[in-house]
Image 1 (cartoon, one colour):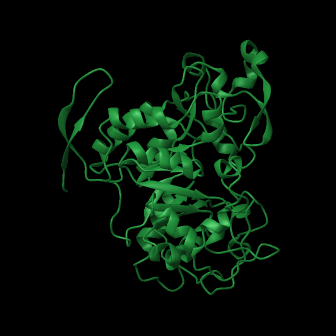
Image 2 (cartoon, rainbow, N blue to C red):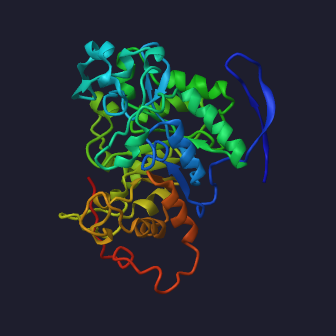
Length: 384
């Protein structure tokens, strides 16, 4: 193993040289990056220490924290700034009066919001499973884990890197950056400061910053040398472009000319998996698009989201049985995207993604692995 020496700066101390595990970013396109989506979201509540630890134990290369601010402008990790579905805040009588309705990216959202709580107050809350009807087993962990700060995720990744002997990448997303800048709690400045303070401002992939809003990434690019990942939705357009009257849509951004513009500031694109293997009416899978090849031609890597093993998230031809929450042939879906040449999986099941990646080059034993409809080009796919 190759070790690099970097200067690490603590919050109060001085820079000190120490050996670091080799970088997490895979330079060889043949080594697909496995990204633990909000940790190991299928096995533990999202954005918790237990979820991140399990993702790395399962072989994830990167872990993903979504970043939102507190009232006192500390970055914490939650799926959204509205936290009624991911914490026990609705059960807390002392916080009942803080329930409110806000306009977030043009939509009315009702609930409790991180920006209305100090960090100390958020630390009194506990995480809960966001999708209890689908992941009922995860509810056993409700109330166990605290809300984490971005700094705590970086500290955890550093510890897990030492244990693993290879750097665990951290893949933060700036959530609703235009909205937060409009209320005086911008995300980019504290993100930049935290990355620099931790000695991670370098282009080796130990931190990769993602956002759906190009202006957020461009702000980060002015100060940091880390790789950037332009996330792409399936419909509509980035909210920052909409806010300034720019008509560019996500579909425009995925055209060759749009990809060329992204390549001016980012290293990665991150579309929904249906942008690589599209859906026909009724949920069947159409022919693969040229997006993967077009991205590579533009000099971009491409990571697709979000892979899940439950029937309701799988192509119709890969489902097993009639129960939506039962598991189907998830490995076949990974194989189909591996065949297209994707560079990363964003997955709720890092264990399945790692298995699919490792078995790709092994000869399949007849009778054990059956060719799937998707592999034969006639799979049917459905997503919620």
